[in-house]
Image 1: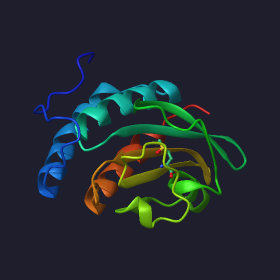
Image 2: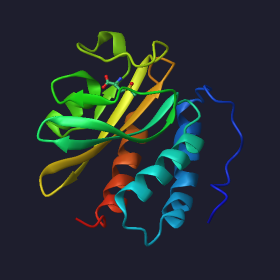
Image 3: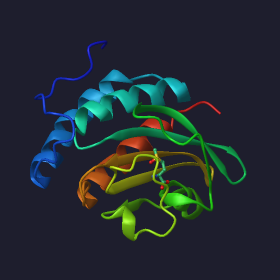
Image 4: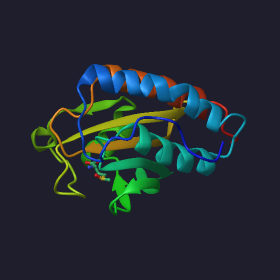
Amino acid sequence: MSEGILLEQVTRGTLLPEPQRVARLQAALPQIEAAVAGETDEVALQATLACLLWETLPQTNWCGFYRRVAAQLLAVGPYQGSMGCLRIPFTRGVCGACARTQETQLVPDVQAFPGHIACDGSTRSELVIPILRSGQVLAVLDLDCPHLAGFSLSEARLLEALLGRIFSRVES
Ligand code: SME
């Protein structure tokens, strides 16, 4: 599939009510899986997911990946949105906390998160999900939103499952 996914057009920056966001994500999931079916290249998957999740999640102002490039260091990967920080140590920010703990970070108010890195001053909430392989962080998916509480636990769980399915087949 080369035309992205079929979803209702929503203006970038709109925070839909939570049930609509979940329904939109659920409608997108089979289309996203079909778009990347059979692909095993990590960068091809990250780039395509950054594109399709950006379309799926209109509340995002940044949507993309940070990859583990050294023992305790992330470097930016494929993304959509304004320029992100290039490198994030595991000790810093929401992405660092995700990589360090290997746990999803659902942050409804980034100003209340100690050490949050403000790449874009308009960001108010954030969701970061780890992608793990053999007990190590391969990368994290970072989603930023200019609204408070821009992401829900239901969205986080659906995205965790999607990433788990898709990246389990990445070649090592
Ligand atoms: N806000 C993130 C940094 C990445 S950028 O926002 C794209 C953090 O605190 O980890």
